[in-house]
Image 1: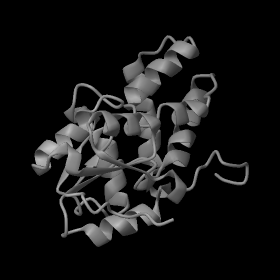
Image 2: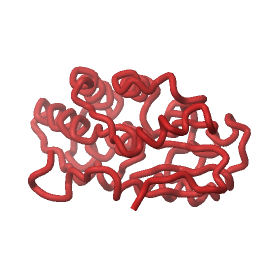
Image 3: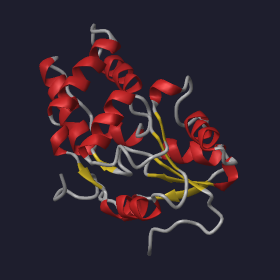
Length: 203
């Protein structure tokens, strides 16, 4: 099985976390650190279930499930501080990065992520891919997030390419729903990237 660009694709849209960036272990460690400081526990499965959602959604769920008094916005700030501290630990998902680099300059490309712009730019700078995309659409740029199609539709609009000709590379269920709702070509990258929940030997 080969990760490839569809013949009919006229533009490419990449999710960031879990697709271009092997950042899940760092997100997990960051949330564990935050919850440890608040004397509560973090259920790692939340990240799998909500991949693609903005950080505020994770914070609201943790606040609710752990009966925390802290504001969700403050939880987000604590988590982002931990994530920044450990940004050098993220790694690239080579199969996706390699395809993206080969396509660079040949076809319009955008990133469509549920991450904040600050988090997205930190990661992309660390991976040295921040200059390789025509547009970057983050959680800060749309009102409705994945599984709503707005993030990907905004990417298509900026690239001036009809949605049906855009190929989306995604690892998250919410993102895949968003791509399908947008009427785009979809590639599930999970067979090409490491799943940290696949077995106990992984991160």
